[in-house]
Length: 160
Ligand SMILES: O=P(O)(O)OC[C@H]1O[C@H](OP(=O)(O)OP(=O)(O)O)[C@H](O)[C@@H]1O
Ligand SMILES: Nc1nc2[nH]cnc2c(=O)[nH]1
Ligand SMILES: [Mg+2]
Image 1 (cartoon, rainbow, N blue to C red):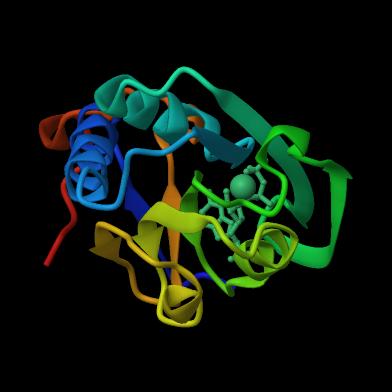
Image 2: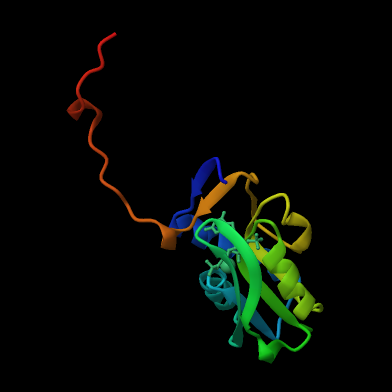
């Protein structure tokens, strides 16, 4: 169970995806990109734009139910990518590394990159932008909404 949360805004996610794209320029050009659904789709779209890559396929892996991890299962394969040669696989993050390991086994020749990496998943990715502590749950912009917070002065004063 996570002991803290890290909120990523749309702006930050866009900046991080652009930074990853700039590093990936040295590893390409790529024939295409495989996005791991669903979290990898928005990062993959931003990176595809930066790398001028038009071919995007998806692989669908179901692993988590809310924050609870289950048995990973592939419900759609990325047929366009074959064994991954010349392809780039994108996900939003690696946590335990289970999802990435499974996908890499299916496309062993692909380059794997993600925005955020926790220590257990770090060895499974070729590239990432920011390391996040293992006990921190990353909240992506699509998971959150701005919330009204009452001003301090509106709360009853606490007596010493
Ligand atoms: O390294 P792991 O422990 O396998 O965790 C990382 C995976 O978990 C999340 O996806 P999730 O399975 O929650 O599905 P989603 O992308 O559809 O939200 C995240 O987007 C990664 O794909
Ligand atoms: N949103 C989100 N999904 C995850 N799946 C595995 N780890 C995480 C995380 O830290 N945040
Ligand atoms: Mg995912």
